[in-house]
Length: 223
Image (cartoon, rainbow, N blue to C red):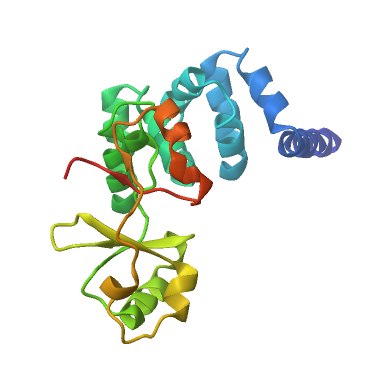
C-alpha cells in the first residue's frame, strides 16, 4: 500500500511538472526512443498529450503519433488545431493516415482533407476552413440568425459569396449588428475584399499590405 501511494505521488508530481513546463518536457522526450514516448503519452490525459506533442519537433512528433494507438492518436488529432494536425499527418505513413481518418469524425476528416490538398508552407495548408460564409441573397437579419447558430465560425467578419461560391464581399460584425435587418447583405457588404491566394507562401502572406487594416484575410483559389 505504501509503495502504491508513493507511486501515485510520483505520477501526480510528474503530471504537475508537465502541465507547468510542457516545453521542457517536450525537449526531454525528443531524446527518447519514439516507442517509449508513445507509451508515456498513452498514459497521460489527452489534453496533456496534445500540449507535449505540439511542442515537439514536427518529424519526431509525427513518428510518435504513428506509434500511438488509433484511439489515442485520433483523440489527439481532434484536439490539435487543424493546421497542426495536418502538418503531422503529412509525415505519417499513408496506411496509418487512412486508419486515423476512418476513426475521426466526418467533419474533422473533411477539414484535414482540404488542408492536405495544398502544398506545405502555403496559405491553403494553413487556412481555417470553418470560416462562416453566407450567400449574398440573404438579408442582414437572416445573416444575424446564421451567425447565432454558428458563432464559433465568425471571429471578426462574415464573408459573402455568390451563387458560384465566389467571394463577393465582406461584412464586419459591428456593421452587421448596426444595419437594418431588412437590408440585403449586398447593400451593406464591402465589395473590394483583400484576399490571399491558396498558393501564397509565408513571405507573401506576411507581406500582404491588408494586415495593416484587418485581423483576418480570406484564402481563395482560382475559382
